[in-house]
Length: 368
Image (cartoon, rainbow, N blue to C red; front, side):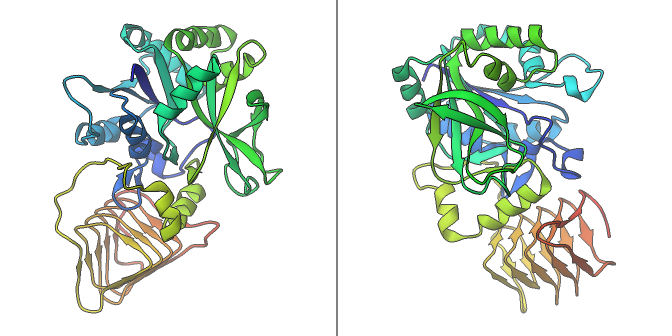
């Protein structure tokens, strides 16, 4: 495919309190072994896209480490994955937009031989064949094709995301979902358009406002450009806050739900780990849970997500919780409705009990 895949970063409405202190949302662990950005990059590579630019707002270290150690099934002689950051100091974070980052790297984007670009944000999780979307885009003779997902729970989920008003297959308006209605066509912030038009719109966005994101210039141009809507089917979630991260992890414990995301002919690529299989010792057990490899489980895991290389002590119960990789949970602990970040040691405090609406979060590297 003669196309450039652009993995963009999250808007300011998306923020994982605590977790975002050490890495971008795309670098956050998900389902015990993946990073959130793995899903969109895998969509690119499975669709035959071998030229990928990953844009990072800030704190790029974790993304650099992960991407450079992951084989996304790209031919290294023909393909290329590069990580790009904004190159100017922003006086305020509100100036740190995707458009500003694109223009800081315009000299790289201009050198690309790709005719089309696909822009997709790293904080949405779904599977899609972009090759089919491109074919539809070309057949429709549209200037831009915008992806959307129809939801019936917009009061509870996708709050803060944009939604589309669609008439006869064309996008007529874009607005923010404040949770007022349950049915919405949620914008996936993914667009297909020609590379020359993409660069022109970025320059126009800057002329209109230094605070414009790319979606803002698309919204402004709806009356001038033909913007088609392309519906995504299947599982979709937006990781724009801690509750959304927790809910998505819990939903995907369900066997039927997870089948919508993980398909036999659509592998999700991630960094390999040569850890041994998980070891259950003594009365160790796991019920209705996802457990990564390399763990040592002596306690009871119920309805939870356990990352790689986690140690769980004797007489410990972990329920409805997420334990990120390389953490240690001591003996006689009870953890419920909680998110434990990487490299945490839980020992002296024996009980952590949040709620499903407000899970407890223990930040990376803490000892409690």
